Image (cartoon, rainbow, N blue to C red):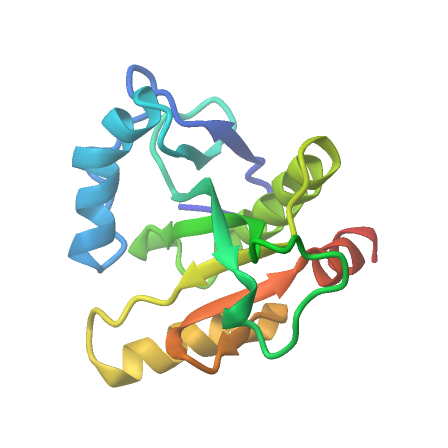
Length: 180
């Protein structure tokens, strides 16, 4: 169990070292992703998975998965200044954020989100990135879906008008969170 004295680390997911067998966040799709797909997707350079573990431990307390993508500017309420004529802008796609049921409510999810924000800033400096985009999962019904959306909205994510499950935050907003 996580305590105030527990040092938490965010590490690159290493299937040979990190114990994912017992991970249970309460959402079967997120559990299965970590147990069945994350290793292969990472090996195939499709995504990068980062895990939260207590220092010196291998039990995964939470994780997030990110990959790069493109977004058509027509999905936004207004075209970003400097957007290319072809209409595609680079994004960081946040595929999943999950926290073990045993440690939910301890702040691990927020720590993982801050890690995503830091990674986005590094990517934007190296290659360009206009925003972080995610799809809030609808698993578990409407109440669970709305709770997930509200959690992301608390960080500053906004919903796309064309898709109520898709949310975004511009890098300008992300940089303000990281620097502030």
